[in-house]
Image (cartoon, rainbow, N blue to C red):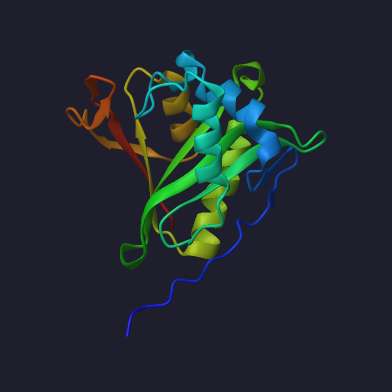
Length: 184
């Protein structure tokens, strides 16, 4: 007899200035502002979306009700306007090892206000309290100094790298660093 996978809705998480909520179709413009921006995606493990249709495909994947056993994504929305300004997620979750990986992106015009620190900290708290994550990792390109500063501010430590040719992006490869946070 096979295991039954429970489908759950992505919970809404609140911070003083943000609402981390399930993605909706109305988020396509905000998500596109992130995923189509080559400066923002240059350190990601995929190329920037070149069309709105590519972003819509990503949005459909992010918006689906999912199993918490592997991954879940949240739209990062301004708490006042509920406008999508970014995304946070966890993926590559290993339940038996109490570990997972996180990712995040924020629209350029919202940078420099501490919003991503607020969002990622809330995501981490959720992962530790509700998913019983002990180890949270972030795979970060060594040139992505803003992301490295954010990770270190939140208690992540560099454990190694560069991991040679870890991500295939387009026709080339990227060699990111491994950062981790251990819940106490």
